[in-house]
Image 1: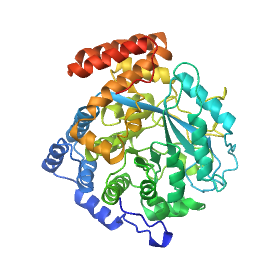
Image 2 (image 1 turned 30 degrees about the vertical axis):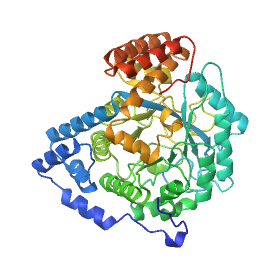
Image 3 (image 1 turned 180 degrees about the vertical axis):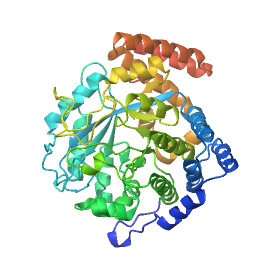
Image 4 (image 1 turned 45 degrees about the vertical axis):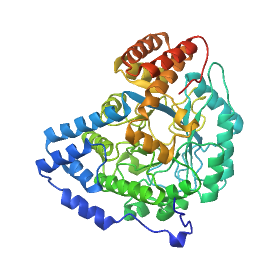
Amino acid sequence: MKSNNTTQHNLTNFIDEQLINEEIARAENPDKSLVREILDKGLERNGLTPYETAVLLKNKDKELDEAIFETAMSIKKGIYGNRLVLFAPLYITNECGNQCEYCGFNAKNRELDRRTLTAEEIHKEVEVLENQGHKRLLLVYGEHPKHDAEWIAQTVRDVYSVTSEKSGEIRRVNINCAPLDVEGFRKIHEVGIGTYQCFQETYHQETYKKLHTGGRKTDFLWRLHAMHRAMEAGIDDVGMGVLFGLYEPTFDVLALLHHCRQLEKDCGVGPHTISFPRLEPALGAEIAFNPPYPTSGHEFKKIVAALRIAVPYTGLILTTRENAEFRRELIEVGVSQLSAGSRTYPGAYSDPEYDRPDVQQFCIGDNRSLDEIIHSIAGEHGYVPSWCTACYRMGRTGEHFMELAKTGFIQEFCLPNGLLTFKEYLEDYASEETRKAGNELIRKEVEAYDDPKRKKILMDRLARMEAGERDLYI
């Protein structure tokens, strides 16, 4: 990739607000034939331009909205099948030097109980998560000057060091932390993180400036170039996103797509994942209770569907901010990864009184346990829960992953590896009801598998798991 000049004076703003506004204006009141033409193009799985995505978002015809949802569903099932990757967020610290008007971690919030986990407390949290069956974690950090890259790297080491009973170990640690310089990103890359995740929140500069009134986060361009620096440091997979409710949603969707294109142009590959949280109530954040740009459920569903069509091979992440019923709808139109059994403050998983608004970042909409979620998606809806980490350990990441995904070759790995991780969960952690439903789903999936050679390998490894082996993958 091209080297990214990280000195602040040389950072360029590649978000052209005038261009984005012109694309939105052109997309207003689109002709039905244009919407259908764009949907036909989307089915080719080569993605859409930001303007074409705006046309879908600006469509007002309800029948065509349903066509948008159906197209997104078709693309999602064609690429990802019926797999859903599961993870849990683990909050390491809620100490923060930033003043973000929408966030409970705001440095000005005197009502928040500030906590930073010690190595021993991290161990307790990870042990609880491992004993639930989690294998993939997203570590979340507030941005505080005293917590540098070396400290973040040590917390990752602490997480990876924990091994609990049964098959308990964390196999994939992703990071959501403030932007670092290239050297800082190298330090966290060296300890084996997976995806580096950072959200711009909003790409509209005037709004960004208004909402970020103190701390390093006031620097729009430093944050905008975080993905470039992470990739320069050797991190293959990066995740970006926006917080809906802060500014006009179509603008932020298009800006996000322009960011994806710039990253692909400069670094050879776009983001591995995109997240799309909606603003939720948070202690001490008045704006979070009254979003300036509230996004309706229907509008939000269209955003998810349009993103799936626009960037078909990029993972779309759904958090527990949304309630269980709506999460089910969004899974159908494009979501490929979702958090499960989440708690959003440091020490929450080992806290017997976990419902604590005085320490959490935002309110949760889906409070179901991991096992309840798995029973729902597998037993009721036929999705295969996956904790697969094989691609990361086999070097199928970054540009190489995207090359495999775009040829469909990745399907040869994803379904069997997903089934193997699901079997592991069923053997070691599931309730009896979930185990029964899950084994029936695995039986059906194996029976329908159409590659005789790989089917034989899969059946053999499933049998080895029943005999006690663990962490088997292709």
